[in-house]
Length: 76
Image 1: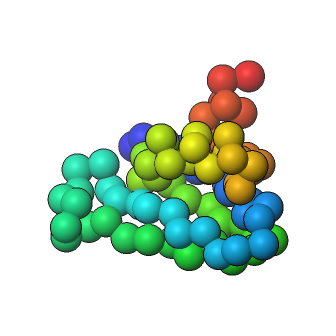
Image 2: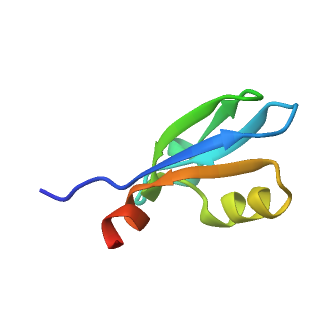
């Protein structure tokens, strides 16, 4: 049984941020959802379900911060 990698994201902005998530083999129209991350809150999501490009873009813009990534921790 494979372990699920988890990513914890913190919203450092003053606005709600929608994060797009979908299962790896999921269809865009049937399975994609938006997780609404309120200001100052955190969310744990399966890393395989997040849109990596969206996460990188929001981090560069200082909107969110990844405060935990189980893949990075396991590599140490």
